[in-house]
Image (cartoon, rainbow, N blue to C red; front, side):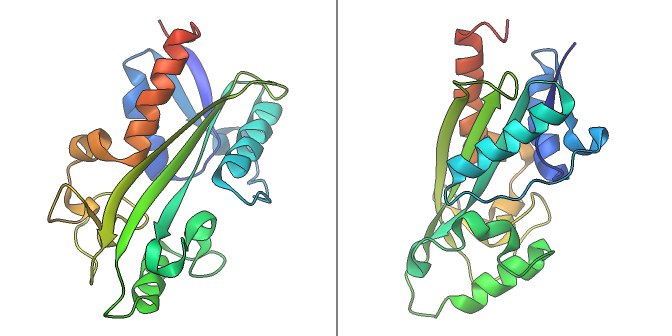
Length: 199
């Protein structure tokens, strides 16, 4: 079985990647299994941060690496929290810290349209000059209160455009079919097949 390191310690992301790639005989291992330390995300865009993370994980482990940089853009907040989504509520913030701050930042009359963005980067090795970069988004809006127990991050307050429930109220199969990460994963799978990485 081929192994790829996921440049993240996020259990929710690991579960999503592992489920999707298992059918291709690829084992997705968290970087924490190799004692890879989190690398400072010094980029100003999702793409830059994903490349920084993938390169670091590939360098330390010697394996091909996948990194994802994703976040929530809220139109009324000029695209915030954006690349700061994971630490919007402060350094070490929990998911509920982040979405509670977000709900507090939105006024009643604000346009609540929003989207999740996901950038996936696949690097064959740390010096890969042509990493595969895939981008996808998931349109929706911000609800008025958290709902649901599935998912992670901002899922309890994100209402997908196709539904009247939060992303945290969808099954994992429904979410994988609709989500920014699910769509980016499909693009990545197509690219990996085209380049002969996946059979």
